[in-house]
Every structure is written in C-alpha cells, then in structure tokens.
Length: 313
Image 1 (cartoon, rainbow, N blue to C red):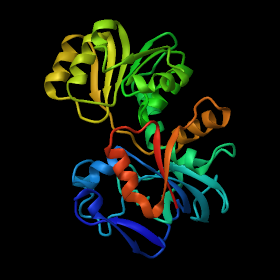
Image 2 (image 1 turned 120 degrees about the horizontal axis):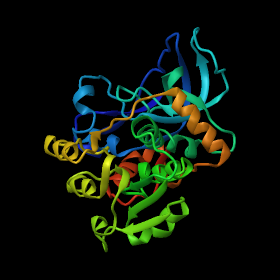
Image 3 (image 1 turned 120 degrees about the vertical axis):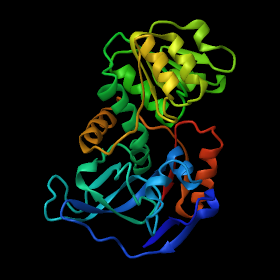
Image 4 (image 1 turned 90 degrees about the horizontal axis):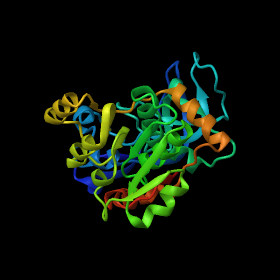
C-alpha cells in the first residue's frame, strides 16, 4: 500500500510517500480501506517537531495522521458491531500512533462508528478529531446546560465550527469570534452573536460567560478569564494553560485547564447520530488528492481555513 511517512521534523519536506505492507489486524481491530483523511493543526505541528512528536519520534516508520473514513475490508475475531463492507469513520489511536496517512489502516473497533449514509467520506473524515474535541469539551468537561452562555473563539475553524453547532444544539447562547469575512458563515452555523476580533476587543463587550472554548491560546486565555463568570470554565486546546493563568482562574473561582481529545467510539456514535439527523454538518473547504498532502499541510499553515481540509485516497 501507499503510505506517507515522516522522516525528521522539517515540516512538509519530511513527508515522503513510500510502499509499505498492508497492516495486520489484532482481534479487536478492523482493517479499513481509507477513502478520506482529515488534516489537523496537530498534524502540521507534529511534522515540525512539536505536537505529538515527542511521544512518537521513536516510531519507525512514523505514519502521520489520525482521522479517517473508509470501508471495512477485514475484521478481528473479537469484533462485534462491524462487518466487512461497512463504511466507518473515526479518530484512530489518538494521542498515540494513528497511522492514518495510508491506503489501509488497522483501527481499534472501539474508536469507530458507522458512517451515516447521508454524508460523504470527506464530510465524515472531517467530523473526527475536531468534532470529538468539541463534543468532549462541551459535554464531558464543561457539561454545558441550556441557557448558558458559550464563547467560541476561532468559530469558523475546524474545532470552532463544531463547537458552535454542538453548543447551540445543547441549548446554549453562542457567541463566536472570527474575522469579518467569516461573520455570515459563523451565524449560519447557529451562533446567536458574532464578534469581529480584528475590530472589537471581546472583553470590552462581553461578561458573565459560562464557558470559553479557546482554540487560539496565548494572551487570549488571560483575556478570556476577564469575561468568564465565577464558577465558569475556560478550556484551552492549542496551548496548555500556564501555571499563572491557572492561578488567576482559581483566584476568580473559574475552572481553567488544557484539554486533549481522546479516541472514543461511543462519542463517535453520538456524532454519527447528529450527522445523520442534520443537527451538525461538516464544512469541508478544500479537498486535496493523496499525492498533494504537502499542499493540504500548507493550507493548514496559512491559518485561514474555514472549517476543515480533507485529503482523498
């Protein structure tokens, strides 16, 4: 099979297409013929020696990627709930070695869900790491309730566009920040309010927010604490909350923490149900063929991606 491996940590220069044996599966795994792969900022960060490079650098070969949608071609002896020929999707082995940049992936069955028939493989692959991050942050970590006020930073981005949709479905009042160019898009996702971060300092116009979901990091976290109510929550996904920020949050009676998504088949099944019902939708802004993985990475690096970038296999 074709696979894209990482040799060194020089960004796109480290991505190399090679021929590798099709992986063998364990008793609790299925072999997935990959149709689409979602590309995430963590892929790009790992390729430059950040992200998950520290825990995976000894892997040889190191196959990047975690998000897949495809067809089951083999199933392990202990697998139930999936059959050969099923269309499935999921985030595989995160934060471990997912090996998604390949024509075939050995995936733990409990990291997958059946792909809804009403969405494409591209839309399904998109709704994995980013959508799981939104789901797990909003429900497992923050336990968002109807009527609460949720501030979604980078609301037009990969994680952000799912945060808006899921928070709205959970009954929250949702405020999304983005550039003015993405205002209509963010409102179309269900946001009740939009803030152009280039024109307005959000801390000047907001207060008593129950949950801030931050996909930006840096001083955005400190600023977010200013608008969060006592007992509220600030979740950071791109950069861990420094000790000083944690102390500031604690002093204000705010829950402040870094959050790392984890593979979870039950959560994937919840996402599948919402996708089937049209409650959430994946916005795939660009699709690249497998041999243009470098271009897909460069699009993520631009920082101007609306929704998700997907690669077809």
